[in-house]
Length: 292
Image 1 (cartoon, rainbow, N blue to C red):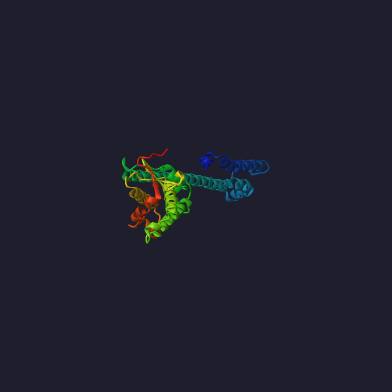
Image 2 (image 1 turned 60 degrees about the horizontal axis):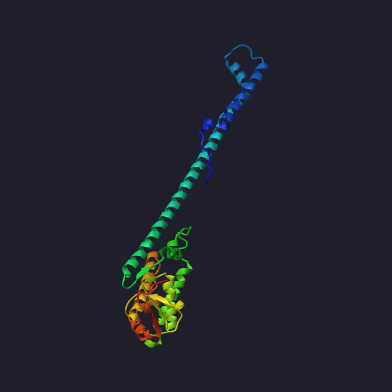
């Protein structure tokens, strides 16, 4: 609200003086006319004289007396305007306070998210295994697109399709791994590679230096970036574990309900032997590769 009622004392308002002066002025005019057209006689304070005086001047006296209720009405209107002004100011202050509070919460939440990403990169990355690079700003916008809106639960990311897409990919990855637990060599390497690429790309998790991983005779555009470890199986396994760990950290930060059973195969001890049994089906690039 930009247009506020300008506050003025009652005595400085035009309407106050109009309702006060006009009735009195008219009463004086009518009283003078009565005086000029009446024979009052000499000065007299007897009861009959006083009664006669009030009887003659009852109209101008009533007119003059009407100024008081009119002033009361004007005063009531003035109080109403002042109350409206106070409500406007209060609403504006409340709106500004809510806006400042929401913006402050947004900054704290965003900074906390950046810190979470930085801590993860620092904890899991290294010169030898590959420094982790994540575009925290873009990732924050993807997970919390309503952070500057009016939704009070925006920090949970409720209804945001990006969460659902990543969770779906993780569930598919878990099912893909689980199918090969009884027969390690039954892993669908192409599906596994595609899903791992999907989750690492969605979480913008990059290693530098890294190892490119794809299926045998697969296209480079279908690969995913793995940790820069000497052991190929361990490089792939560590990448999967770190990406699910990173996602769960974000889930916890957002206060969302953790996804348990659908992801359980990713945490299984059988994952590493499954990868080792199928390592020949992968094309793992040399250590020290860098993103162009």
